[in-house]
Length: 161
Image 1 (cartoon, one colour):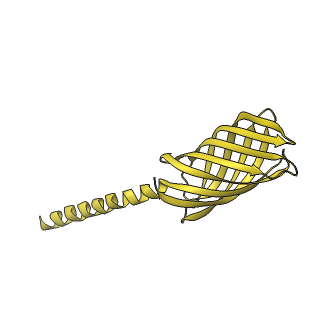
Image 2 (spheres, helix red, strand yellow; image 1 turned 90 degrees about the vertical axis):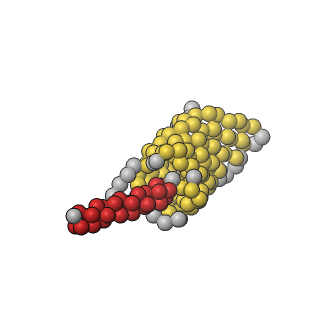
Image 3 (cartoon, one colour; image 1 turned 60 degrees about the horizontal axis):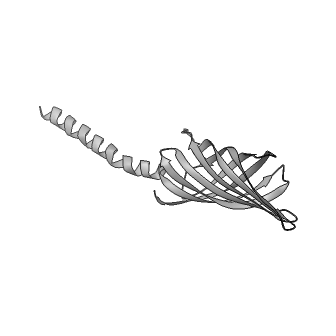
């Protein structure tokens, strides 16, 4: 009887310990992130700098708004994105992700220009270890003139979301 009570108490203790660690683990996956990014659009033939947020919706799915400011020789070009990003679970520190959404491309050269709405398809890989971690991403910008860009940067973990 005593052995059985000890076994039950040990089992309950282990279960409580496991439950106590679940919120911490879940919270780590549900943290918002601020990202700094730099990249190159191969069709525009322009480098870009920008930033993004990753705001958790549910586990592994983030709302992922971003802006890329291109650095053309003349004029202005900016890409505003509103994407959803799904992160796949892996056994390694690196997690691949896929996503997509909408964009608005703003262009102005010599006083004329405008904006155009389109879509995005994206995929990448990021680490979720630590408070500051790198990512690499490829993005297809679906416009009248579809383009491809590669981007890399750092994500900075913010508070719990």
